[in-house]
Amino acid sequence: MDGMSAYQAILDSVRTARTEFEANRFGTAATAYQRASRLMTQYAKEAATQEEEQYRRNKALEYREKAQSLSARAQRPEEKPLAEKEPAPDGQDPLRAIVSSFYAAPQVGWDDIGGLEDVKRELRFTLALSLASAPEGVRLPTWRNLLFYGPPGTGKTLLAAATATAVADLATDQCAFFNVKVSSVLSKYFGESAKIISSLYAAARNASPSVVFFDEFESLTPDRESEESGPAWRILSTILAEMDGLAEKGRHTYVLTIAATNLPWKMDQAILSRFEKRVLIPPPDAAARERMLEILLGKSGFTFDGSYRELAKATEGYTGRELEQLCKRALNNMILEQNAELPSFLDGRLEALRAHRIAVRPLRLDDFRPLLQEITPSVTSKVMAPFLAYQAGEDF
Picture: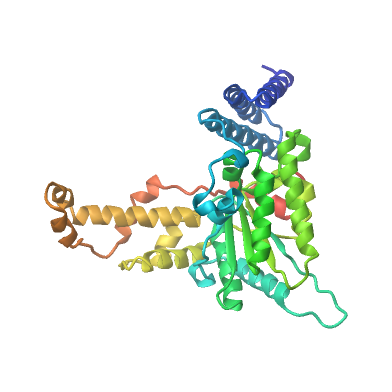
């Protein structure tokens, strides 16, 4: 198949997917998006430049994510509108019950996040500037909307929680933190998402000071050129209106919106313009990894008879999430080694199992070495290239 034919086949598959979606035939729409993803992946291999290849791979990923979402939707019973659902527990308004499920008490501080010192310093300055008083007659440049972008697993959610904790410390331990996974809202409450967003911001205003954190934000704000259907744009309009309304509320109502995305170049420019402050969250460098490993093992109460610096050097390219997985696996393997008889307690009584004390020993570098072959770093220079280009303002 030549380039023109391949491109046409991709367009045909996407058109078919959209037609099937509009007809509520989600299974066949998912199949069409799967085919578009496969074709686009192959098409990416024929790209003339690295930038074009990356763009095509991103589109392939976008189609695959849509296929997965639609496939899951096709396998579950059709959602009723919120007004037709059973009343929430204790007679609570269904919308309010959904918004309440987003609330999370922030329990992470700046010191709980290893590394990212430049990012934390920038966030602390931004936060302080937003809350401080300006000289009379002067309007300070403040930011109420922040965008965190970077590869998956680099600590965007932790940084949002730490920001909420910082606000709570300033406000006598009172700061509401709403943690919203956008893809979940779209899939579970399709057709009601705009109402949920409005109710969410109403709750955030009432609970001021508060932080609203949106994860996977790109799924809520598709590019206008992608010809997405109407519901997505109603949600987008609601968010824009809420952000603009908050800007007019003044200092007495403090709601900080933080959005996180792994694909900033996919986001609509109309909403990107509301995020004057955009912060790249990179993977940790060697010093940051060393600090992260100390925190991960230290907070578990285990000792490490090895060099954190040497282990940090061996984990070049690892994200915070991968370092956490590495430590958990090493601890688990050590405990299995020291407690080979543990499963036999299941043949006895519960009291005997509860009375048994787990044997442990200090961790060694040798506990990590075999795992380094299994848990490989996800962030390479090639993965970081588009994020650095985006940070530099280069076109995609």
